[in-house]
Length: 465
Image 1: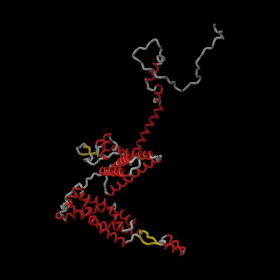
Image 2: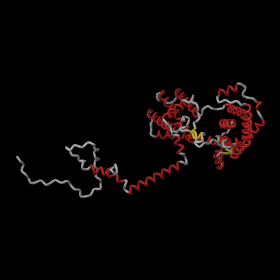
Image 3: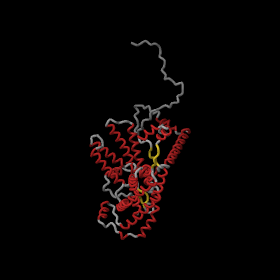
Image 4: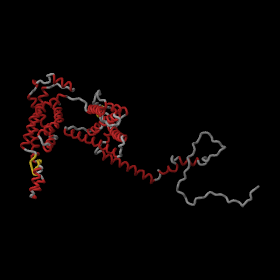
């Protein structure tokens, strides 16, 4: 049974867009062509479009979008961006090179995996390592030139291990705090700030010491930064081992202190191998024993002649006297607030000038004469502490018949003004601070002795050359 017709249906047409679209038509890429002929039983919708698509793709792998870089405006923009990036890079390098030598800094990060493992082992176990001298490359003329990078010399300082150990220490500290339930986001910044501040103060102190001792080098600052960061390796080991053995109860106890003592000694040997001539150290010790009593008498004379403090009424007493209040003055007298000692700037400056001219001149003269005579009477030297002690105990360390008075005078004249000028870069500050802030002669002697330990050893080393 056929259905009755209701008339002929209108033909179906696809809608034709009335406005031109500027969005490009996206087409799927053509399938890969095969060397075998395709079957004729099935038609492919790509067969008619393949020549056209291949022609479009021949210009760019991005099809119609590949023509973007051929646009003049795009080329101008690309050229402008390249010039801007290049100028910005040159500006950063020029301004950064004022403070940090970028070329020299790359030398400290030239490391390998084997170097990092070997250097970490050396930092923790430096006891039997030899030699400690750095290797140098051979220049074109056959002479030694620049130092080899860390990847080629295990004794060369690097910055990869210090930077990584600093970051590891910061993360380890926050991890331990998190395991204890005390983690806060601010702890990361606080730990990083404290760590960088410690490194900064240490580097400033080392730089000051190098300046006072007239030690200079082209890569001195970068070397100090590198060496100052190796201590975090020992800190990480100490914290990790102590926390694991103590069950997360902290780094205290015998185990924590034992690990700390070991890593401290290992880091000390790593940073300053014990290659010391102990005979000049003993000479300085002998000079200190002989020079300390006259030095104390000199300080007492300066203090008696130019007292550092004088008695003056307090501000409260002056106010009460201005008001004419007798009761308040009596109460301040009972409480000991009527007078107070005040620093005499005039006397402090006079003592400092006398100490750094007459006192320093006599002390330096005695030091140069004593060390020159002792060097002639003690010609033997030893780089080990045990060897030096055995030599001194044998009674054969001194031979006073070898002392030549003319040679002692000549050496004293040659070294005197150099030592005086070097001392004026350091001792005026020690003397001024001691006279201004230390009240007793005994404490001033102690401060001067502590400051003179490193200085005297350095002077003995210089005199031994």
